[in-house]
Image (cartoon, rainbow, N blue to C red; front, side, top):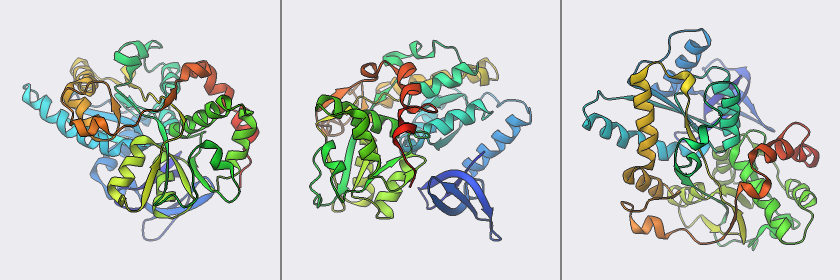
Length: 371
């Protein structure tokens, strides 16, 4: 079972626990690293509630009451859903309902999907990849046609993959081909656990195809330049931005803009490659974890709120490419550069891409050699 720890106020990491310490901290193995921090259950009421929910679910305890909602999300959506939750709670109470208790859990998308399958009692999932929600559907917790139940293939916002480099771009990184030059260190999470990392991988593959290179050989060379694989996108951002490792971070566009906002535009620059992917993070109602009709009403309204003009404005504000700009700040909409985007259909859809590239024995396993 994965353990989540806090490294700082806003930074967490996830991995297998390897040691307990007398002061209450624990050490986890996160890819090639050993990290020590406070278990999430000790540092915040919200995350303590999540641990309690998990234990209760595994013990066969009753499901959550109607005015409680657990959203299990992927790694870099903390800021987005902190704002969404507050706005939705205000909207919900304004319509005559009791104030809802909304909890969120964050981690690598693949790991989060496994947690829900294994018993984490989420009513809503907001993950990085449709294939991760497909796995939850295969476990019988929601219908197999879940993606057709909400607009835009159940993706209320989109993103893409860009490069975050150190201020002034000292290594002169302009496109994917520069990442495999001698002396360049690339930071990306592990595609086996992180949805964002799978988008990174596919974007690099698409560039290699369009530039007449052998994609498999290019990805092999690219990952030879990766010194460490974090389990999720936020951990990779911490490695690059706060630990100072690497020359370039392959990042969700929203995560790159957030780094500029929080850490300073004098610290980093964003480089937009010539080709990237249309990343469509989907959302779904986990019908198998719904306690009653009242809770279903709450969870359904929560997902619908993501598509409302107010919810879409919040997505734009948090650096996501949403669909409805009617209530968004024009500056939030105008910030996004235009670039050539390849969608998942180019790879045959997730039903083909997931096992072919990221399944056991797939192409990633064939090309990657652990440091």
